[in-house]
Length: 166
Image (cartoon, rainbow, N blue to C red; front, side):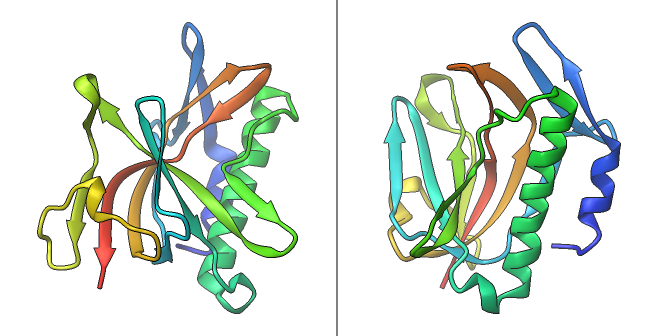
């Protein structure tokens, strides 16, 4: 993750739609490749949606993790400024005893079909059932919308491609 990514957030725009906003950076959704990170808990299902958390394990010793989390925090701060709110729900989860985690949504299309490419390190296609607690992943993600739900602004970091590392 590039060190100067936070500087690009001054160009961030929100495009109002009927009941949500498109998040645009230079007229496109934000796309990032996250550093290799572990899944501490496996895959969770909430309704028809699948989620997982990536761990910033030993973040104090990992400069790449520090840059990544700093960028996400800066993005959330900028979104709050543009929305004129301090009620944006963070995708970063913290606990005083543990390293922070980042929530990632695995998007699904109609019929509950996963609309995210999942591959092994050699490019072999995988399914979400091949992702397990403790696996190391590299994820290409997109951040494209923010909406209001339960009195808070929400956004999701959505996986576009998941590469399981060996």
